[in-house]
Image (cartoon, rainbow, N blue to C red):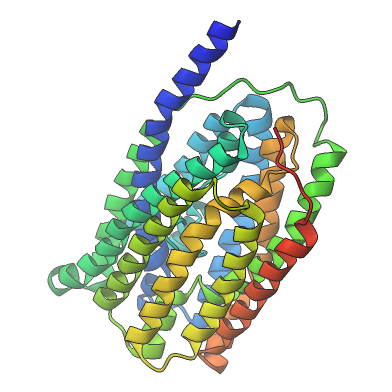
Length: 402
């Protein structure tokens, strides 16, 4: 029996590299699509307010997707949930490439989950990801290391997604502004296909049998705390980040080359922060790191909103990316601390749903940008600072699950 357990652990560890490959391919494709989405819609004549509503529609679709795939993962395996989740952005990217109809494009954006934050870790996670790592690695320090490595690889790969945005400026001189966006969506679709293929080789440890219809009371009690904390952050992210590429264009008259370069630099720093987290996990308490880094994320957003120059705003955003990379792996580990092993999928999905629902604030982002460009980042930063304070206060005393 012990020999079989050791063999399973070896098989899981050996297959981890395919998860890394998947997150690299996914990050390139998703980051391009996320950065291009508001810019492409603006080129097609969609108003700021309507772009905000498109992002909110995407969040609504992802709420349903996340809940269903999380519950499915608890019963049938998180690797299966990951594979299904990959098919939506693949189909969406193909539809955007093939169609010039604005309504088809908007529907494709919604089902693909194209939107939300364009940070370096955006492509690293999809429904079932957090639960898979928590299931395969019971020790919290090991979880932080795996999350950190995946974040680092995903963030480093995201640089190439940003490079696709810079490539747009070159292509547009030959085939037109809108056509250049569409052509690059085909590359994104191919990358999502490679990610899906990589996931076919990912292994998963045996899960305990599900004994409840939804989840245990202890798991529900813990995630209710996480939901309160993350809802504040979600409101802030929804206000500040989904339209950030377009915000940079309007605030500083930045072009696609400058925007792509800025995000590319930030992804490199996110990768460095994530790698540092994976190496230093044994030195720090994950809860302390989660609290401090989230509060600092908010403060840096406010500082960025007040910047009069594109270069200074880019430096501040890059510092925020470094800080986010270091903090995210610790937050992922803290978020599953008090959850029973049989509830990882449902519980992590409910957490994700709460964050997505709170990011419906993105519908107000376009309106606030119309009122005053700095306001979305200022208010969003304030919400994130509150979330950082609540992390330590509400979750104090929580112990890692085994």
